[in-house]
Length: 348
Ligand SMILES: [Zn+2]
Image (cartoon, rainbow, N blue to C red; front, side, top):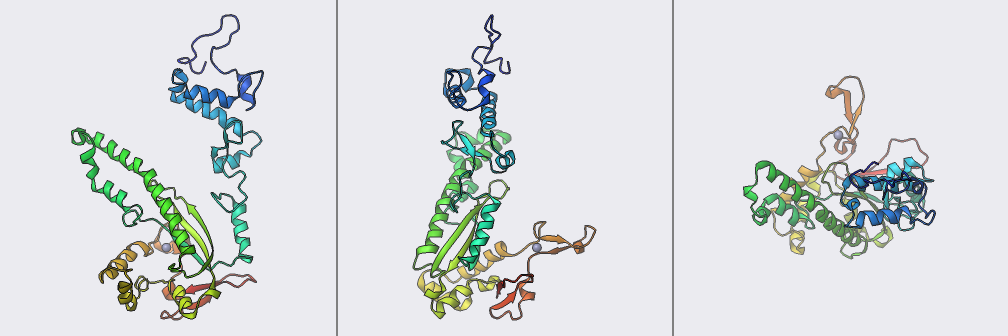
């Protein structure tokens, strides 16, 4: 009755809608009374090109709702809403809660328990660095070819009769190109990301010298079109490093854009082929000034008094310049927290 355009006839004496799934089958995802399971019914209806059920988007949503309802059986609906559903061949409905059986530290981790386990693991695996890697689509070698090709508009020459479209039509095509590139950008970034983490972990030329453990996690921001950034915890095998290597790894932490590439190292970096030319140094400083500089946003501000003026908020980010007792060398400072466990922060 809900879809008269598909199920338009009623059996004369039985008051049954011909072709509609009997509601008694909606109660479970097993096979009842000799009928096929809901999963099989829906699979057939959505994939059979000869049936009107396969071309009606509202009917497809309706089928999805039915399967979702069945997947919610014996589940905490808050967990389902929080994590979402995914393909699960172990259930008869074909859908299951994301990360349902995830007890390992691999793949998607989306539970507070896992984060707590991770904190507890510090007792056994001391981590040394917390790193965040974000993808600069215009500059990163893994994706810049796609991003710059789209931004340049060169693709318009290959789109048949692009200039004949109206302004609105062209806007729609631009959006479609942007959206269709998203999966390609994501796949390239995912592949590059794995290579990069493997490089940090295994390569002899890794800037971290000797790494014993890496735990990395992708995080997606809710802004549209953003690639995930990686949060990584890394433990360094300090025993394997000599004094020079230890200082090198410590020097990688820099709280000033001018210290990212110390000027005294420029000549040797060019010699090793890591930097191609001298003015690449200026480019790096300019780029890091643009990307790494901190600009306050609602995410970092903490309210300290009433009102909306700038004095009502302070930034949560520590100001390394003011905090460090000596800005010319590494200093260790105790974190201001009441705990029997002693933590230290590295400042430059
Ligand atoms: Zn701030």
